[in-house]
Figure 1 (tube, rainbow, N blue to C red):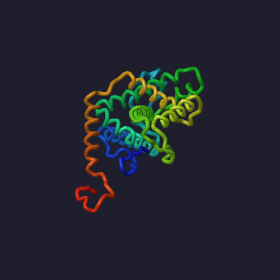
Figure 2: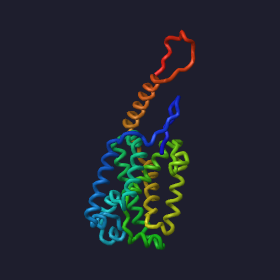
Figure 3: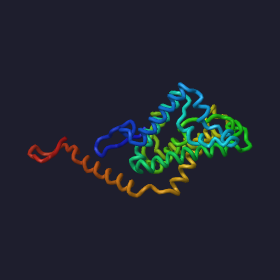
Figure 4: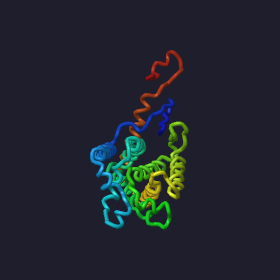
Length: 247
């Protein structure tokens, strides 16, 4: 959970505020597909990522559609919560177009790396070859890495209890995903999580955020800081100090 410190008064906020344009669309799409899964279970079989089907039958659409499927209420709730908490500020910083591009590339790229990993001659990889991978976690892990790179020292409350810097938080979950991908992960495709981190890192190091989007974000941030000064609190002073402002 991010914490946003004020200049004069300590304050805590759960999440980044209102839902931005792309986040709203993505959450709506995920919920709609989740309802389709509930009423028509065959949707999960056709749209979920099965590496064997992609390799043998060339069902390449699964590399994108798996991101909108989920295995239960808690699965989609926590993924959408993470999407809102970490994606909203990134969209405001980058702009909607670049954010959607990043989300698509990291999600699809994580799917591609999952298929490639499933072809390796190891037991965990062979199990993944015939599995049905679903969930937005590949793209979500990409957002986590981007958040850590843009806001490295922003406190995140791990398990809602322990505040740690965003860069440390991402390092921890990356290590967990890597270790989990080497063994029995209990049905969770940790290789996909790790793939999302890897694709996001390469994309951010080779791509560029649109300069106009970055400039717009900096301008809005400057305006907010100027407005905040009008609400500063001054205490103390002499009784005849008539021009002091208290709001």
